[in-house]
Length: 105
Image (tube, rainbow, N blue to C red; front, side, top):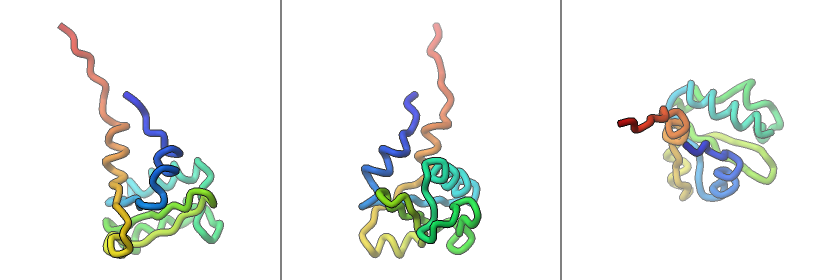
């Protein structure tokens, strides 16, 4: 199974996509990944200090500014109205979590 290359995914989609985290746990995991890649809030504060998920809960989307390695957040309808495509972080992470099965005879 090929692991998600977050840097490639972000670089190829940051201008047209935002990342939706439907649960706080998914937001925590996603923001930790971004933090480990060197991203922070636009204010230069750590993504881990305040995840801002509770503001919009399951509607929370994170917009990434790739070259500056910064991030903002908003809600699904706002980003839809601005023409962004919504990526479901749980689906991306789910691919990484699927167990590997051997076909034995």
